Image 1 (cartoon, one colour):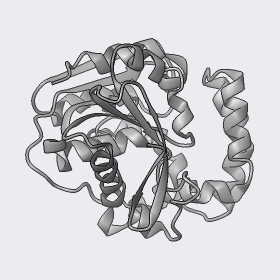
Image 2 (tube, rainbow, N blue to C red):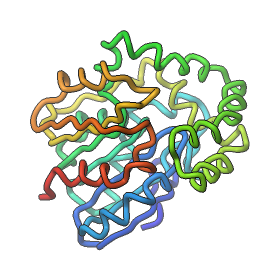
Image 3 (cartoon, rainbow, N blue to C red):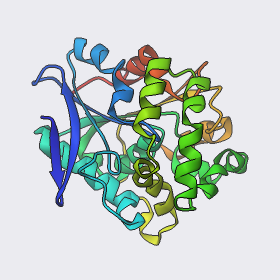
Image 4 (spheres, rainbow, N blue to C red):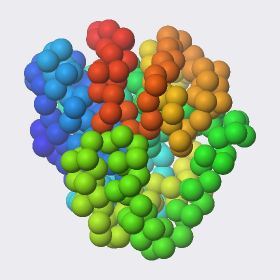
Length: 269
């Protein structure tokens, strides 16, 4: 499978590993794309897992609707559900980094019956972030993201240094910078932040989630602080493990082995 569709949108996907292996879906963050997982997927494939890494809404060229209302959390979760359906699997292990982690937390509640595991990288539970005042200064950059076109140009100028300072390998950092060089390429990704202010962007409710979950956090993450990371445990029911490692924010690109160990902590059914 190299793509899937939902409501007229077509999402690009990298499908790798044994076709009959347990399915692991990998959701990238901002501003990244499915290649964020290029060091992670070979390790999972060697271990017998089938991996599906999509370019998400606003990143796939054929899945970039106009208007911030198209980027609310319920829509992002429905995209994940459509990918699960397209995969042919009854249940999957859902992995998300950064914004992909935010979608994974929401899907853990809304799609609990379709998941046999969840692994979140970097991003604390949404409720933990809201209830941790020390996190708010870390997230203040989101205010500037609300200004159309100004934000696109400002973000585009800072990307190369942001990646390299964060430890992303130079080749990948330059590839990302090239991908988002045109300010218009950042409008879809920034609409994820702009949609946060919508009344319809709340996390969809589902059954009380008991999905086994691992949360991996880098102690030197400049965007997502310790208080919210540690408070996440208060909002996760069932089998849950918090893992802290000496790392920055871009865990798929810089700490692939740690990521794989976090994912495989939860046994496949």
